[in-house]
Length: 166
Image (cartoon, rainbow, N blue to C red; front, side, top):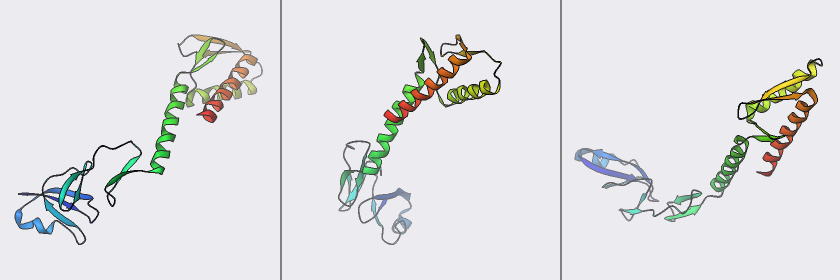
């Protein structure tokens, strides 16, 4: 068995493997090149028929440009990573909950939907005067009807502020 590396004209490793010596030359398709050896397509490229290291990746937003044989910053990837980092920070802030009158409440998507649902419930049932709501620490907090609506509005404003500022 012979180990092979198939690559393109820019030196990008397309595939690698092993085959019988008799089929070695058949591994490359038209426009592709083949050499004997081992390489890792994530860390290596081919130049002048030799395996070369790409070197260390400068950042997550860099991609290897096989034509220039250099790491280059990908603006689209950089923007995606920045958005992902913002989302991560936003999600962390949301997961910490929202403090209202000294109690901390969950404000994840499901909790916000439940809070909004309860305000609709209160609008439909004017005789309901109190609402018991579970805080993040599992204690039950009692609200008057007006207090709960104020709480719901405060949660909405807080969440909107998180989204707008992060």
